[in-house]
Image 1: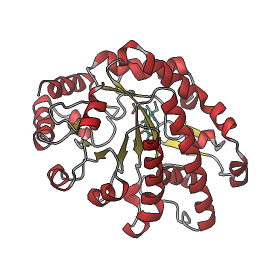
Image 2: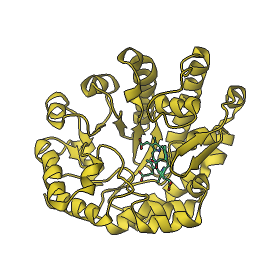
Image 3: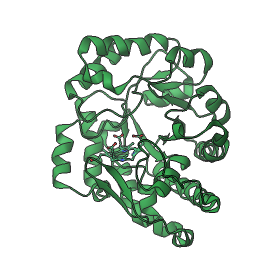
Length: 333
Ligand code: CP3
């Protein structure tokens, strides 16, 4: 059994598996090399051979316990025929949202369009490198996908003014998102994903009163669905203030925490396995500081099932040597 599956199943606290969000990406020169020749990001995600190669790049360098498939949460709107582009130094830009077309979309057409993602997962999970490791599939949570589909770009500071205007549109889109996320999750699992992580990157934009409708209900449905396929779920509701309440309601197998929350409080309040927490900016400092900060998390979660990870994705400016140091340090702890 892979260490992550072991930890989730047996709630063991004597091992600290490690993987890093965005471990396959721009801080690696070998990724930038491939990216330079593949200027269309979506096309790159739809190239199973290259996607597999990029997914495995960090595992060839570091002793990580999981491969997270090189893809993007925005493959879902892409599969729903909403245009998705990535502009350098700006981020994603989405096209018009055509509800009537989306409502007519058939499962087969969606699956055909993003099938290369499943092919890549299959190749990664069958590769020797991942033999005793977990292949992690992922999706964006319904709320975060709704944000991108209506806002049509990252809401760096806030949502567009009329975001909540058309309540009927929101309701319909949330239902479509949930329907196709289930299809997307099922296909990832059928092709070898042994854990699913749900990224809810924009929970922090919501008022507490709106959490039940936009976050708790649709995310719980996905967690139940995934678990009904005998697959554990890691939830990452970045920026949620009350992690305890989130866990009580959603009950994921693992809760991934951001770097703004106090890990000691999490340890005190939450019984389920915990993942992540350390600020990715720590990797931009020096080894001594990195060791101290990583040790802080490892000490706090010493008697608690804990998967080492960061509180958000690794930054593009990160020196791969610092990553190497971190992984070795966690393994030797
Ligand atoms: O290594 C991995 O973690 C696997 C691949 C992965 C990517 N995106 C590749 C990627 C994963 C798990 C994601 C998740 C994702 N994508 C999230 C949730 C996590 C988070 O960061 O909050 C979100 C919100 C997105 C949407 C997205 N994709 C944005 C906002 C951007 C542009 C800015 C950025 O953060 O890079 C992307 C592009 C993207 N997705 C890149 C990569 C490697 C960079 C592409 C490039 O320019 O080379």
